[in-house]
Image 1: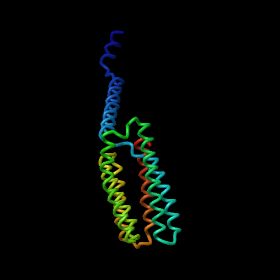
Image 2 (image 1 turned 45 degrees about the vertical axis):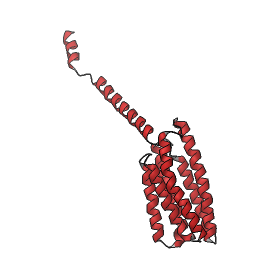
Image 3 (image 1 turned 90 degrees about the horizontal axis):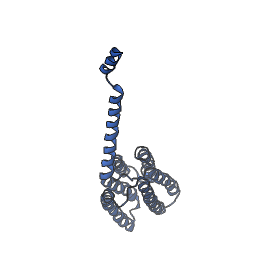
Image 4 (image 1 turned 120 degrees about the horizontal axis):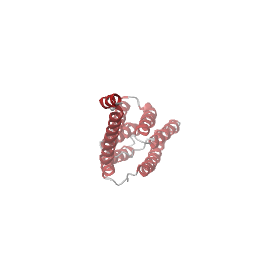
Length: 207
């Protein structure tokens, strides 16, 4: 009996060691997630972004059927308003579920960084529209939106600015392609990129 007791005392308690290690990993994960939520705007919508991509693909189909380029761009402008409404609603819903208000400090930093390139894009669009430079507008849409996403993404999760740089790359490519590829590039950027990155955000960052 004494021999068995001595043997038990000599054996390491591996169960408690494993439990301590697991607890430490859980604590580190909790601390990391808490710090990320406090310093980053994590309410960027994943499913909402995917829906924005779907509506962009539909808009590309409608715009491609228009005879005049001006009418095609009107379709895309209407899509921009629809996508903006979807994005706001999706962000509000995600922040409500996560319990992080949209008026938090990270959210304000995201918005203040996102807005200037977007405002520049609107002003440039109005100038191009006034002078009837319609064929230049699709690349400008992609470039300015991409710049807005990169700037705002500096205060969000890592995948967001990556998406913005992809928009900028597609906008640069659109300038190099013939003007007839405008709707296709808009579908690839505002449609496909939103769907792909929206799925990544939804999977990794909770919807």
